[in-house]
Each structure stands twice: as C-alpha cells, then as structure tokens.
Length: 306
Image (tube, helix red, strand yellow):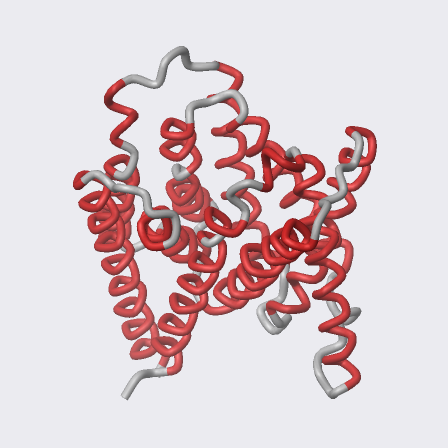
C-alpha cells in the first residue's frame, strides 16, 4: 500500500505529464497561427481568452461551493503572471533570431537550472536525480540531429535571449513553489497567472497593431490554442506543483519534446529520423528514472516521519 507522500509523488507526476501533453498539442493546433497573427497578437488572444475562461470558471465554482479566488496572495500571483508573460515574449524574440534546433537544446536547459537553483536554496536532490537529468538532456539533444549538421550563423542575441528564457522559467518555477500556498487549487492559480500575463502582453499587442482572427475556422483554431495548450496545460502544471518539487516537475515537462515528435507523425504526416525516435526514448527513460527516484525518496521520508 502506498504512503501518502508516495501518492503525492505519483499524482504530481501524472499532472505534469498531463500539462506537458496539453502544451505539446500547440504544435498541432497552433501550427499556422503565428504566421497569420504575429507573435504579439497571438499571445494577446491566447492569454486574454484563457484568463476570461478561467475567471468565469473559478467564479462559477465559487458560487457552487468551490474555493474563493480572492483568498490567495493576489500580488504574488499577479507578479508571477507578469513573469510568465515576459518569459513567453522572450521566447518568441529568441526563436525569431535562432535556428529552432539550437533553440530547443538551449531552452531545455531549464530543468538543469531548476535543480541547481533548488539545490543552492537548500533543497538537495538525491544523487540519482543528477543522473536522470543528464539522461534527459542527452535525449533532448538527440531529438534535434540538425544541430550536428550545422545551424548556420548563430546570433549571440538569440542565444542570450534563449538562455534568459530558460533562467526566467527556472526562477518562475522555484519562486512559484515558494510563494504560492500548496492548498491553492491549480485552477485558481492559473486564473491569476493568465490575468498577469494578459496585463503584460495586451499593451504590447495594441501598440504593435492587434490582428483580429477572421473566419470561423481561424477563430475556432485560436480558441482551441487558448484552451488546450494554455488553460488545460496551466491548470495541470499548477496542480503538479502542489505535489512534487519544481525539479521533478521540470524534468517531466521535457516529455513535451517526445510528444511533439509523436504528434508530427500522427497528425501532420511528417517523417521522423531514427535518431529523433531514439532521443525521445532516451528522454522518456530519464524522466521515468527521475520519477522512480522521487517516489523512492517519498517512501523514505514517509518511513522516517513515522
């Protein structure tokens, strides 16, 4: 029979997988939106729609006996939302200046930064966590074989922006785990985060010249992009953060790389090289090792607590 802490470890990992799965679908549902709307307008509709849906949901839930969305550290939650909006904007600026293969390898250094940052702040990971992290990083690199055939001229600004995004995301996860009470439900947290992100993106999009999606098909695609990779992914992410440490969540989220490859084959009919499939397998293996270590540590801590 599982101890409570082991159950939390498993539950947290499953929520993180769900978050990664929902976010990975952005490669399918939002494939053409960036070219059609541009980054500022796309992010505007993404965050504004997500915030509206989440706030309607939490207010209706409150009326039905759910949690009070105002009974949270509102300033901290909004600040985290602003931070999230900024890191997404930085990512778009980086990707505009850098080859996608190099961008993926650099931005997915964020689990390393999360584990290192958590360690420096006093949360020492088990030795096997470092091994799992190394395996995950090897898997990520293998999924972008284009990196080894050359990526053309490398923009120093693009590299700096990508590393900045990885560091900001790592800091965002660590700070989130420290300032947001664990009892706050993921739906409530997501509502505040999306509101904060909207406050950052809205003025930028309006100054840039907001592009409105035209046609029923395009509007549906934008709504889907706001709901699945944003609302669903965000809720699952914050629920994962309630149960497991940021480093463990970060490593599970790298499954997104493997899932994007899977969706490209299933939905987009793309051919995938064997090394990318091997990399995806290695990555998933590293994630599984990390979760086994996490469950083992939870079991040990539960025994020590009795």
